[in-house]
Image (cartoon, rainbow, N blue to C red; front, side):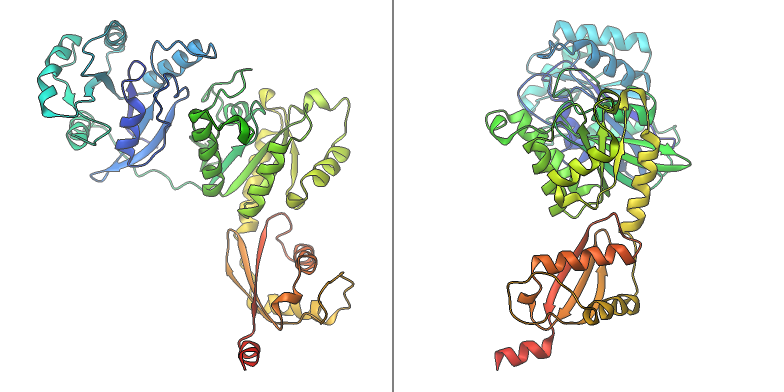
Length: 446
């Protein structure tokens, strides 16, 4: 995929992530007054005037990080610059040229990259004359913008597009599948992503909570394009009430689950399943998302447990995901990583299955006629008149029945188990919608 790569750089708190979100037209990078919120390379593909570009956000250059990750952040910035075709150098028009701005300018001159200076926080035209001093950085006249107010966003992009007009811009390949990696902090999600793409695409550290944004990583495997979404580690709700960064990280993690085709739920094999894990499991089940339980760091746990016992343990503590297959990995050594991706593709295919109405009704006819010993509280016999599938991803089946109240949770669970036994959808969630048959409704009204 040949796309011009536009990388945003600058010192901390000049508004790089605000500009990234403004250009993208959606909230992708976390924006917070706290310096150093962005650590990894966050990227997105934009279509502007029938041309496609890849836009990349980076951490603040020269940040003093609270978790001592300065070197990692700097490495990510240098990597982003090495892959860039053009750099948007963001400065603060209110502050003027700062020592770190001069240091970044010196670094950019060495790279010989094309550079467009964006003087941010120019909220009123009265501030525009102050942008003149940025010409001393050596990259020509700065474009005055306000990422917060979307001022001159179009002017900036016209300048950028003019600089890359000579470059090819192919239509990006449509991704086959999106999968999100979720789990509590330090479970190994970022190591898993890096193992897939074969480079340090996201920062890996022993410090819990290293990843803060939800980072989309596009990669190709066997000629197909995939998007892996690395998410921040989830903490207990009580621990994120007074921490804006953790709150944004949590909401992005849950949003990533919703937009994923398949969820890779990372479990740390060296720790017991926590309340956070159980809460995430319930959320995945409620969203009807195909899921793989990825038991990571298995190299550290296999001496004291075997895969069968651990699988039984997960089924017991997370019964809502009993249908989900389980994979055992060591992400830091890239063990069993590719097979997890292959399994994710299989789940996506299962969740996309269309079952003919004739086949469904034949199946439910067998259920209706077969003797069933399912404990029930309501008096009466549940009868299914008609069934039809109305959606895929998730597979959604509507049952028209005699009395809705007779289809209690136990009986629905029995139906789902039988569906998985007979049809090729054994490892994905199935949504049942129970509706009364219309003529029965009319009788009830009378």
